[in-house]
Image (cartoon, rainbow, N blue to C red; front, side, top):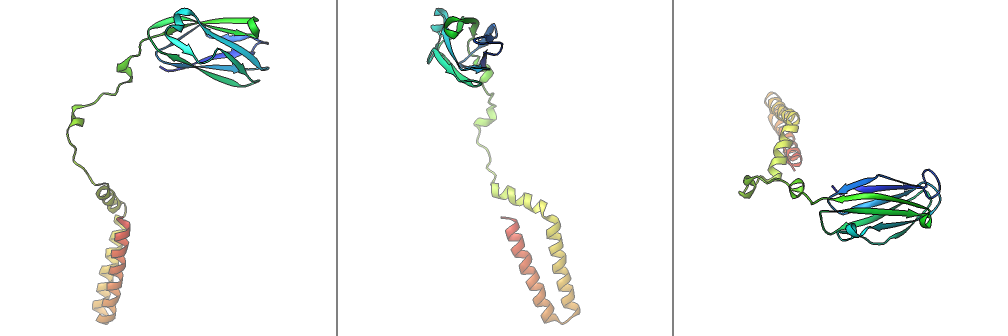
Length: 184
């Protein structure tokens, strides 16, 4: 449930703070300080109860005009609850967020594993699978090549045998080379 707590400052006036009244998580989370106006300093503070389970890397943050500053809150222990205090304008505005940290639900983040995964699997060669799929894709081309070979041998029987036979062998060699490259 790792989420982001958005805090909007300077949206409705200088030093104004707009934030949800409560926030719930089960893991470390990010605070996004979104400044909608002039540059500002924001002070973040975890109350005593919350600071026993979580921590901030720094408490004072400068946020440039029309910029967002991301602050990580590292959760060490759960469950826990407490208040996050946000102060702007050196005390001109103050807001509080009730933070609830739930225990991490291991089952929610787990991936079920079937017993069949523990048994050895027959290995299929990727080359064999791709070759068979290439044969299916190129079946019309292969049939056209075979028709050309049959036509060349038929012409060899009707016309002078030696020249037609040579032509049929050239067509057959070309078909073999094409098949080799198609199946790669």
